[in-house]
Length: 436
Image (tube, rainbow, N blue to C red):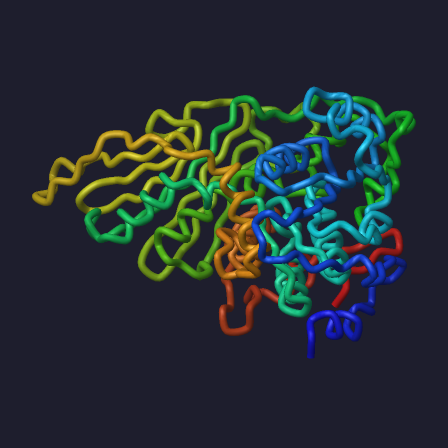
């Protein structure tokens, strides 16, 4: 069956009150590198706008539509230095479902809060669009799995915003890890100390500011009064919308820990932490978290802290592979090897600095995959992104349940059925349902 015919037969998913657009918007992008690719962006306050700017650096890419529930954000972006040249050339939407009906859009960029990623990606896939969706791919293990199934069903080319996968020095570091020159690796340490990130002060609820469609911002999340300390960037610190540093930075860093060790899913997970540094600020997720993941032949340690920069090895973030002959440490600036002095097999390497712009090259890789119709060349496909997002979610679930969890790989769920019932899938509210 041809792809268009297949989409027409399978688009009517059970979506509650969610509108699934017709397939009239589906367009085929030719293999020619000179062929224009039209993109529409949903959520342009933060990384959504940054992704678009990097995409527009790829020849033949044009922004034709923007969508945001905050018209103040749209005005600010289109009046910015980058936006002035396209201000009168793009269509503006507040409802992403209407944007998906625009016939000339080939690719949809999703840069919304995490709790919207699954619905938007699945709806865009059903509409026949190629998709770039921000990380973490889903806000629950169940959402991650649904997004993988949607990509399989519709066959779209989908890139996830874990752009470190397009950074050459990270790839070089993994090649060294895989070479065996570090000797047996017993521990992988993943650390994330972010001094610039901290929750906002607690403030009173207020009426919704002018220009914001707050009900649409909440979407499938529970209805709560508007509060400035939960909105825009700071949605990250509330469980209804995201998962704190563990999912915000964790999917970047845990990703390379899993790649380096060629690891699947952990056997057991223990997450310990709390609101130790800022108990009086507005947050639900922990500002300090240590999680231990048990794998067959090594342990993985996640260590995160908000508001301070003094992480391990003199860095504020990174991944350390601790081997018998040396320790390889890699972060966004480069990688190096610290020798194990007691080892007879001396391994030492000074800092190998980064050599490319991973964020920009992530977009180039995505556009190339579309033009050549080769999803296999994507540097971060849906399946890979779901894998690491599930590991990050496992750490948060252990923290929230305050217990050591065991993962049943044969049945793809936790051994404790009570944990599965409560945490594998987020509850959807306000008439929204996740398509199945």
